[in-house]
Image 1 (tube, each protein chain N blue to C red):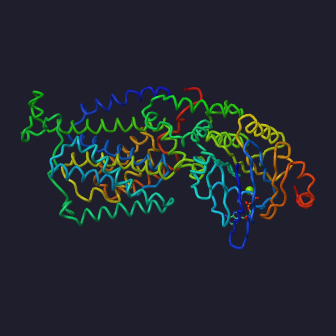
Image 2: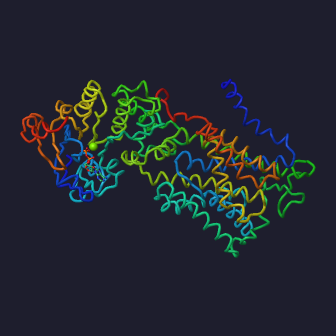
Image 3: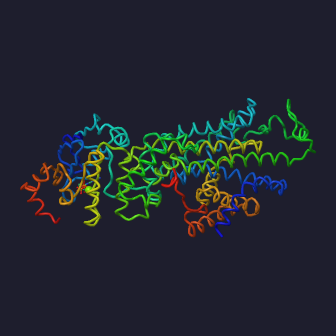
Length: 250
Length: 332
Ligand SMILES: Nc1ncnc2c1ncn2[C@@H]1O[C@H](COP(=O)(O)OP(=O)(O)O)[C@@H](O)[C@H]1O
Ligand SMILES: [Mg+2]
């Protein structure tokens, strides 16, 4: 379970996240939705150590995340994230990008350096290929990611995060920039990550229709505050949410 | 055409081994200097191109290696061959020590920091006469021997001379050829190191640091440790080169390790594009031509600048060619 306790984040005069608490259960898909500027990314940055929250704590897998470095949040607490603006290693191939996530496990650096085909290394390549296969990317495994389409780059970024073996995977607007059919396909793949591979998901999305179908639980943010929380059915009927979303342009 | 050029390249090592047969004394000396700069540029390119850190003070580690041998060799009689690894270790150790605070600095600030460190070290060498001989430097650095064979006309105490052992007439070229083969061997090993780095997890992680430190952190990679590893690895190579330089010259002084030396090596690496073959060509252009046209020494920097600008305009990746992936899906 990933527990966010009373997180606030202040930028000068702006309270971007205002005393938000939430719980994401292991083995489930939890979505955080809200319009642009609602504070979703800021909340993610607080969870994954990219911002130090002004107040509050995040607890996951027995670790207090706010006390760990970014690398340790990924490597030890096994909470791994992607970025709203894709951050790949551009000149490296898709396979190389994914393999890099294996490296925190201290793959036998010396043996590999000497050119030995160690069992660990072969297994790492096999796992990386497995994730690329899951996202239908094996054909472009050896292509530099800068040459891939936007949708493919998104998938490489998610495959790479999965190769870091997260217990909780936090995805910041994975469907942004995709057309409706691509976005539907991606949601199916994300569902499989949790249902078949047992990785818990925490998912940010600004368009609530995208995540309604796959989420177990939804948290709605507005102006940095938690507006509503519940199952997709609860959220659909929640008067506050209806009011907020009827007023919004998406 | 490119295929044929590539298969011809396989004979390049052979050609380099045979090269001294064609060269006279001056030629041999120049060839060794050329390879010395190739080695230095191979070293610095680990930080510059692979890890994306702008190091403006690489000459510091070159100096550390040179003074390491000059001092240990003259004062304690430590052999050249033992000093090679010692110089590498000492340089790497200093780099880890200096790098720990310096590598916390971002981009340009790191570059200025390395520049500052190299200048401080140079001033230290100039002023601490008791240790380094100050501006006069240290002379009579012992010449390397080959399994106890000395290349002098009359061998040193307890040594045999090479020309007697090989039943040859004495000639000064034998020593120059010996140096050439030492540096050729070192550069050969460095080229192998580069190849392994390009194929390995470690080299790939260095590249990831260059591309996006934030993404590295999000994957749990220890960016600080990777940077120190790259910086120390490059420093170790600088140390080895310094040790060879001291042995070859028989004399060291702070003038050889100034800012211009760092810039020369940096320019070769940038022009060479971080790949061994490109670096060999770049060193040929940037070191040998100024050496041959000594009258034009004063214009050396203008020449450097002009070449760099032209190459960067025509071929921004340098002379070295494009990246090849470290691993492919089809291999295991
Ligand atoms: N580093 C920052 N400095 C100042 N203001 C910020 C910073 N990051 C985000 N904000 C502000 O916080 C608010 C929430 O932003 P964000 O979390 O990116 O929203 P969302 O991801 O929900 O679209 C916005 O008003 C944004 O301008
Ligand atoms: Mg956002």
